[in-house]
Image 1 (cartoon, rainbow over the protein chains, first blue to last red):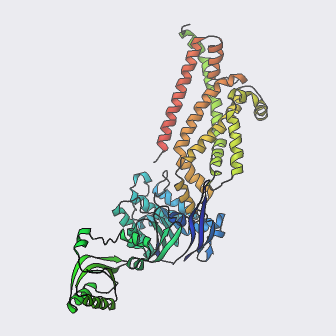
Image 2 (cartoon, chains in turn brown, blue):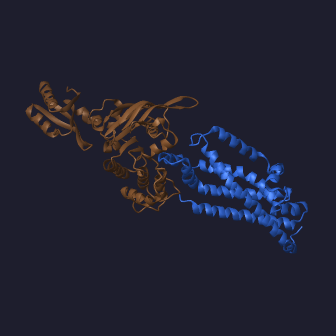
Image 3 (cartoon, one colour):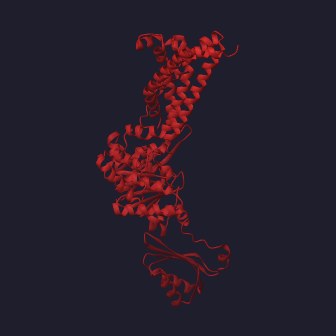
Length: 337
Length: 223
């Protein structure tokens, strides 16, 4: 478990004082994948770099398994870092060393006996799917392959935590998906807690269990990814979510609608379509779908439909009440005229 | 004022000796520059702001000394450090004595080149090594030096070529060498043959050093 308590990182430049991280408190549970989202400059990068003290925070606590990293220096800090792997947007491999030597470097940091070195590197490269690349130099690898080497290096010393600093932001969509699948596999099979920062909501939707949204160095909202997708409370969260779950309907079509416009959200196991057809049959209303989608977040369906309901006002009221009773979120966006 | 071919044959033994002296002086100086200048350059880099041995006191003191030595014209340095030369080699005259001055000039020159080469390394690679829990020593030997290797080899080339130029002044302390021959016979005594031949030898030498340097630098670079 990682507990971040009142963490601040202040950058002092000649002209001004910049609060990179402003009094952030977060708890990241063991074994989960936690995503931190924000625009560039929101402070997410500073925050993740504070978690292994690549940047020393100005104040606050970072408790990892109850040990405050802020109290560690020199050898003790290096030993703590062996248990915190990190991967980077631009991979940061040693260009003059082979794939094998890059991973071996991490193992030597942990004083791994030399007779175990070869087996361990082989094992790691097999896990990331690069078993045939032992003696290749990083320049000869594609971006996705470099990130796999980065992952192998980060996992070399069996860490309990893996920090991902925009790990997929330099990769194309297909490669991003494959790297995310690999991270998920690592999380499941090795039970490694993953903390990732990204500006891409897709990444969070794909693999995170919980997330936090950052702006101006502060955490604006945090919670389970599913809850935040189904019921975002802040404008910023809504903005990020609309980047992956868009409910936009063209103006012209909206203008032609005369009835009540309602947004209906089905969470989890609720069979949405059935409820809607029941409602239309039970009450004297006509339903017209304007938009609809079902997203699977953490393997749980989330259905969002935008409908126009036409009919007598009290019939519509009753229909909406009926739907609300079926564990469905109903939000009237516009009343009919 | 023409070039006398017979005179060239006559001069071969003297030229050979001078060439040997040049190689000897430069050889010693470059070895010393590597032994002392390389660690000094690394130290200048890692004590800089934001690096793992950040130490502004050491950084400024070393930087100051390096700058002082580098600002003294070599011909003055050559004479000024005579006491040091006597202390080290017991004799202020000859190629060995000249190699002391050449070394003193080459150390800070090379150290700055090393520092610059290290500065070109992507900071992220160093950070990744820190994140992995590597010791400062591992970072120096396994990240900094390998990553800067090709550039440092170019720096050695540059230093050797500068030393070829400096070594011409070694005649001041009876150091000998090709450059000295060119100045004493060719320049002061208007002996064109000797001047042209020695300068030609120096040109070839510099070209050769550059060629080897480029080749080696390219051969070791894996990126």
